[in-house]
Image (tube, rainbow, N blue to C red; front, side, top):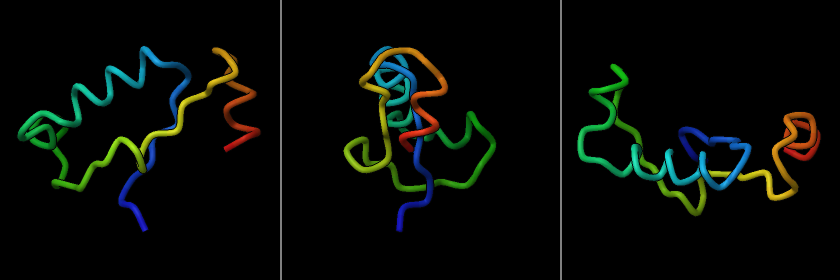
Length: 59
């Protein structure tokens, strides 16, 4: 089981999350404990577009 999964609206958000969460010490910036992050397992991107409803109904 993964610590955290991110549901993202588009590829731009995916790139942002990957860039931030792969930095050394990212957890210090957030003020949280460190957790394992694997973009392949921990990110779900809405491939159908930018509609919030479609992401939540398919998640």
